[in-house]
Image (cartoon, rainbow, N blue to C red; front, side):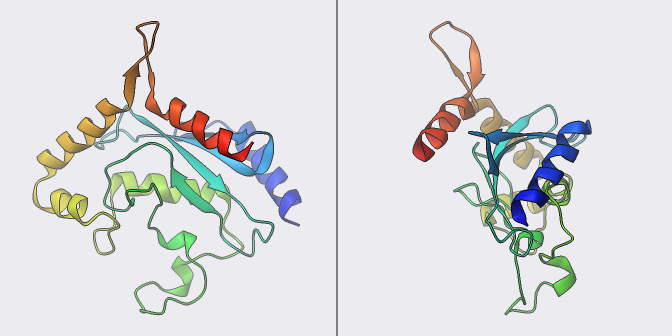
Length: 182
């Protein structure tokens, strides 16, 4: 069931053009997708792009996939390891009662709905449940400083190569991530 659903979802996403993201398979593995998110205009992430991975299990769509950024990103809802703190990727009942069942994972969600939910965090982070408390406090108390910090992270994304051209740091990280799986 998982493979057929993923094939259908992947085909749909690669046939429809969107200005917000693109997807590709990692090592031709239907259960591991590379995702490139494009920062929405009017946000500190505008004109930037971020590499991420969306990993599905054989239990998909009954179980949510894992989503994590490959690039370092300064955001209230992103842990230092790249994992995203967002309700849509959590399953079952919330033991603390913070999230309603409707906000959490269900089989009707698709890769598109997951990715768009994460892009929505670029326009308005959830400051009530931060993964990065420092980023949340900075966003709330000093948006100008927050924007500068995001820009610092984005500036670090690019490194000089031997040919004296810039390429995203995520390429080197991506190379390592895919070599681990080989």
